[in-house]
Length: 274
Image 1 (spheres, rainbow, N blue to C red):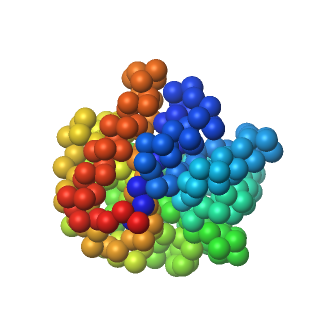
Image 2 (cartoon, one colour; image 1 turned 90 degrees about the vertical axis):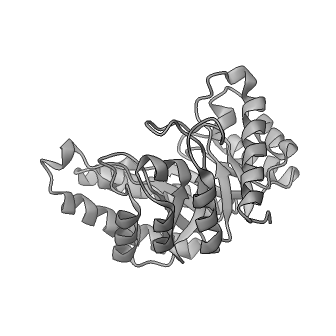
């Protein structure tokens, strides 16, 4: 598997796009994931991302998208977010990325007003449409498991049930290791995602709240999770996710620390770099 980095680590620390791409390559990463909204950036920024990645020979594996409006109860909002997700898929195609990392969001009003099944079925219907659109582009969608109580996909069982409902070869799962710990998911439960997962996020946390720390700074026991991921035979990337560094001026050291720790963890788990 490739070892990658989500470029939001640099962006949130106030570093420019080109700087982040160059530093990602210099540190030794095999690939990069892009967190940028195609509706918010202009043509110059789109070209910059593409040309800088090509120049330093750093392939884009994934483009990250949060689209909680896909399960909004207002049809107009849903239509907008379906269109927005298609724009993201176009952007992923433009960058020659393998997948769109998609966050579906949460049930609203504590599941009390709108029947949960209605929001679930809405999401399934939209992912069938987006799966078709992605397949036409040769791109896949990787759904993220979120560890929050009201998240639509907040454990392995809900992820499997959702994927089975969508039943689309272009719609698959992302595995986020710190999210699994926070959601109380045991490593062996990942076996249910055999032939269903295509992408991995890695970060650490304190075991209580979402953290996105460099591996080794929290409490996650990565070995059992990584060995299960190894046995799934995923051919994609393990991408480090670092958010909101407490010392933005030291983001280079923060990313380098995460790279070194993750490279070691992959080797210990018997996951070869490719």
